[in-house]
Length: 120
Length: 112
Image: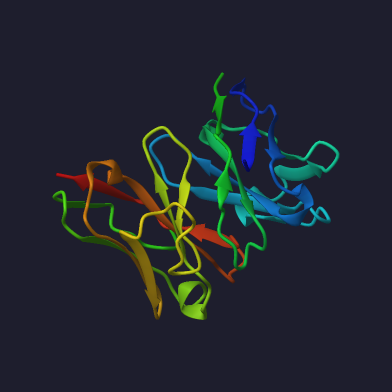
């Protein structure tokens, strides 16, 4: 069974950083990319960026450039998303989704989501 | 303001047919990039419903279908059922610099 399992909920203060993990199982991790998508409370989906699990190449949404870093650890089939200088409007559920090339591919498998709350 | 425009809500009675539109521009749907659709039930992660404009993943009922024309795409649901009540999002690629991947704002489907 193909699964993406994410780390647990986080509560952070403004200005802090958060690192969310997404562990894959049931498929060859390096054969697919991982995108990160967030959803603020009551809002729609926002794409944050993509990383190739094959070579670590990344593409980030322009509005998050400089604050977000996506990495992978192929030894544990895990993708990570770190967001720095957190603000209250970063409060959201963060999802990882499996997808190959962001130009063409849909996200066919999703993690269960990680709630990140930014509050003083 | 989302790059892809969807109606905020649609509704239909059980057994009826509804459609959800997704309107883009020449830098995304109109440029020939594929459109994908997701269903999100309350409190859960999105689920892939349609990929590559009109293809259904294994396990998705054939009551769901997708199409694309010009700068727009549509999701059609026939034989509406109570369990179809959810939020639906379209997704495509955008060649502008701001965001490579764009979503519609989402459409809430209510089964009357």
